[in-house]
Length: 97
Image (tube, rainbow, N blue to C red; front, side):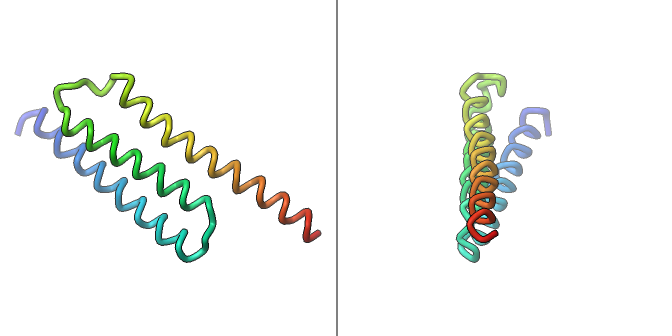
């Protein structure tokens, strides 16, 4: 197995792991209906799409700006989810306290 084939397998494994993590967060969202989990689910599924696109287009280098934009969007979704969770907890505690 050469280096290109190994990169293809590893990117496929990363895509699968990201997809499964998104499924876990989807399950947690269905149980709690907490918006933080749906943000995490969407972010991990975006990362899975990123890894799949890099595996499918193995001749395109990973340093291209399109790959970074998808990752940036995923991490921005996580940041928005955390900020949303913190703002909701502050307003909820203020109304109950």
